[in-house]
Length: 266
Image 1 (cartoon, rainbow, N blue to C red):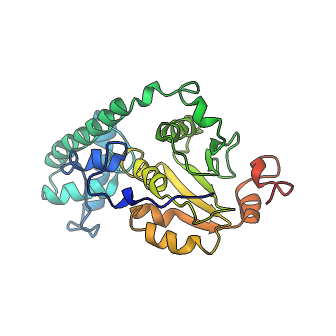
Image 2 (tube, rainbow, N blue to C red):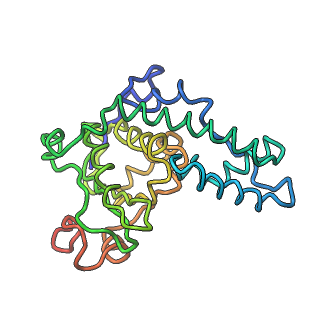
Image 3 (tube, rainbow, N blue to C red):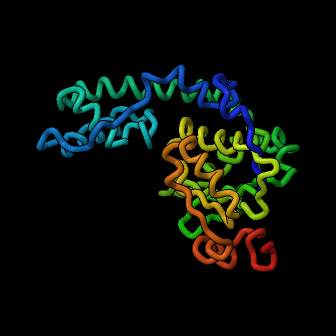
């Protein structure tokens, strides 16, 4: 995999193609920062569960996951803000989630996510740079495999949507695998990597479970150190590993991706 370093990464003004710029100006009131999860009330945990249960019963259309109606850290934050008044916390929390959900739906509409299809991304998909694996991993997670950066951002989102459509019952997250064999710095570009993590961070929260950087060469290490602050909390999901680890710990003999099989190892 080769990733081209681009000066656009440092641009003060970023086009809408980078979801971060679209989201930041419209959602400052929709982001939630949990100051502390230390209970200020002896019944804090009980009240969190009460709010969570009432939202699940009365507000079924609200999204779940990070910053959703079942996010206990966020519920606790709003309870503290409303001096542990359940009714007031629910009222304020519901408005905040609806506002955040509106931003998400607006992005999906403007990016035309629902119009993406195999045909619409066919040309980009045929490059073979990335694909959704035909099998789940040993933890039951859909797998997106990237062999090279995807220049077409719509293909990137299409693959995420395709992977999420394969989620089995009880599973909510996917696995991402970057095959870094053959990585070189001669044409490095981090624009794709930052776009991908931004999409997860702003529009698919709590959907990415783990990211494997496979057989990353030494030259990739300083680039990753530079990139970590850009990808925010998702950096903690990254694991550097070998092809052997991928084969033995993440798949069975029957489900190993073809490019990681022993007879295909570079």
